[in-house]
Length: 81
Image (tube, rainbow, N blue to C red; front, side, top):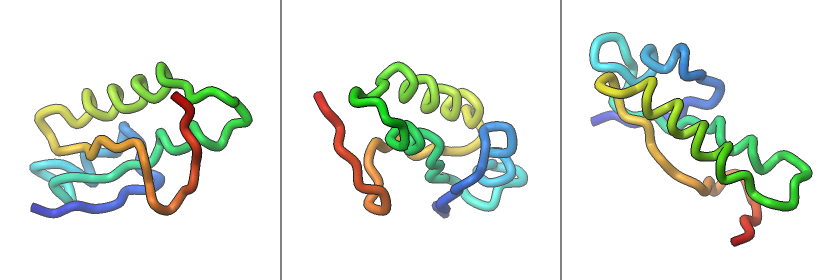
C-alpha cells in the first residue's frame, strides 16, 4: 500500500494520484478542507467540511482511498465545539 500527500490536487484530477489503474498511490491525503480554517469566521463550518469530504469520497469511490482527517500537524488551528 502506498500513501501520498496531495496538496493542490482537485477531485477532478484525483484519479491520477489515487487510482487503481493510473494512480501513483493507493491513498492520498488531500488538504482542501484545511482552507476552512483560513477564514475569519469564528465558528467552524461543519456543513462545508462535510461537503468537501463527501465530494472527495464520491470522486474516489471504487478508484482509490481518500484519507479522512480533521487535523494536520502543519497547520495550527482552534476548533470550537
